[in-house]
Length: 106
Image (cartoon, rainbow, N blue to C red; front, side, top):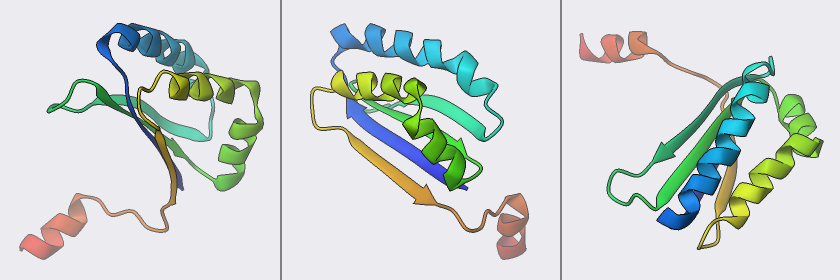
C-alpha cells in the first residue's frame, strides 16, 4: 500500500477554489479500484493548513495515476498553496487494527 499526503497552506480566499477541485476529483477517484481513500483534512489549529490523503493499493496504480491527466488537478491544488507544498509517498508494509491495541492493553 502507498499513502500519498499533500500538505499545503491555502489562504481563505483560495480555499473555495481548492474545495471545488477536490470535489471534482471525488467521483473519478471513488470508482478507481486501486484508490482506497481520498480525503481532505483541515488543521484544527490553523484553518489555512490543509492535507489531502490518498491511499493506493499498489505503487503501480499510483504511478499510473501520476502519469494520467487526472493528476493535473493535484498539481493545480499545489499551485494554490501560499507556501511550498509538501508531498510525500509512504510505503506501508503492514497495517494493524484494534486487535493490536487490545493485545497491548490486556
